[in-house]
Length: 219
Image (cartoon, rainbow, N blue to C red; front, side, top):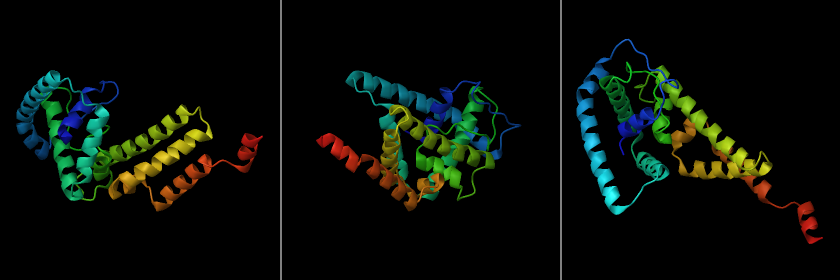
């Protein structure tokens, strides 16, 4: 799945009241992208129809989680500068598509919905090493990173009713995520080796029975 498809998918699932894209006009880059956006949308629609037909024939359904994992694996294997360029191009094409379909008036640098992108793709915007992204886009990427961390923590806490077991589960999850993610995503999240070590120590401590627990179980 392309980065443009992910961005367009996130936008289509979003209500107009939750996000507003306002601009004074298209930049040169967005105007250029607009010229190919309609053709790309038509091609994507045809490909989507073929994919749906093939899926119906085989009765195989790929979950959103599986698609996201596949996209993350693909993005993690790319050169970071190349990924940054792809994300920049995808954003410009996404803005142009919105204008072409009449959903909104946007310009290069508007705040996009990045929830469907992989962690490394979001990190490419947040770190902005190539200088290709606007301040608004960088802020949106950093906000997306924070939202993902907060969501993981909230889910862990809710699953345990707020007990220390949930914090331990989150700590274990953090260690697994840290080991699996790219250096760039770790940097964008502000995670270091110290972050991993602290989470690992807490998870180990929370899952190791204390002397009092052992005595109680032996009684």
